Image 1 (cartoon, rainbow, N blue to C red):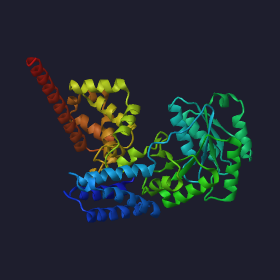
Image 2 (spheres, rainbow, N blue to C red; image 1 turned 60 degrees about the vertical axis):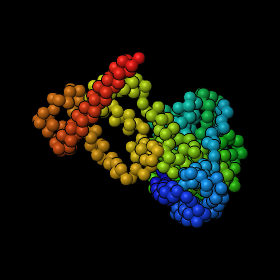
Image 3 (spheres, helix red, strand yellow; image 1 turned 60 degrees about the horizontal axis):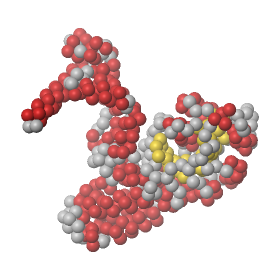
Image 4 (tube, helix red, strand yellow; image 1 turned 180 degrees about the horizontal axis):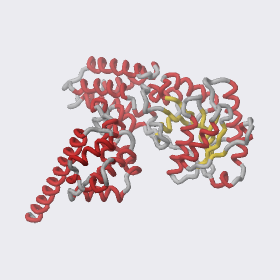
Length: 440
């Protein structure tokens, strides 16, 4: 997320931290570089100018210039202003019982997928969402929503064949059918266009007037840069949106849209799409994102993802295995799958403080998959007792996993070293306990 901007800002502040004493000229030079980095990341020019002015005003204060670590103080100021620029405190959905959410946006922004992602998130929160297909313009939009609904096991209200009136579709969804009665949140996926036009806005205004939704969420594509800001302004002027869903933050988006949108529209970014999978969708929390951009990590989100991906019983069993040095390839495979459920390894490492520049780590996903394939090519007995893996078995495993015998041998060697370290750690822990008893 924002790799280019994050790398540049971290380099600038790393240099600033290196100065024992900071002068106004040092601050000016650093902030000029920050301003250029923001503009290169597609941040709106006026937004960047005002932001830098606020940071400079606070950074030139006497408390900062005379502090023991002025560089650190300026980073702290920048972080605080970045959080404020992104919206300050996280803005949750304001939902009552039988709440209605209108999803709007241009074609290609990820509107239909975002509607399904939001439904899945609400379902995890013990709500009962209902998806309503109100996009009668785009071919296959209704079938796409129906397919996504089946994948997440959420009911979808589909219009009658040949229906062209979107208000009749919405009215049918509100009727006292079993699905409508059971649902606590109704999510309406609406039609889009290639660009904002009068026909689209007239249809959406009429639908808004009819539904009186609790939330109107605009889906904006982060990859479109400053265009996303003008799109958000246009939709807000016509519909008074209540929030924004920013999609494709996992791609090559430079991030300027996220940094500009809140300031320009005065509407909060409520959710972010962080991947293609339906569960790669999370509340937009400005403080956490600011931490990621500045290389401070996002340990809270990492812990939350781990809590979702890892079963308590599995974690306890793995801890016992590690403690007793009885860890085998079955445990290795289980641990590997737990990590996979948390998302791409680069994203996970990016949430750790000081690890945001994961490109330098050269994480090879192909190599990770090859490692998994080697373990999967072993029999259950071989995973439990790696010591029985003779030359013939290793050749069979290499053939089965599409790797070489050398790669199999390397994995076994590293695994053996890891087990020895665990065993030594266990012995050391035992010795420490004995020493503690002696000193009691």
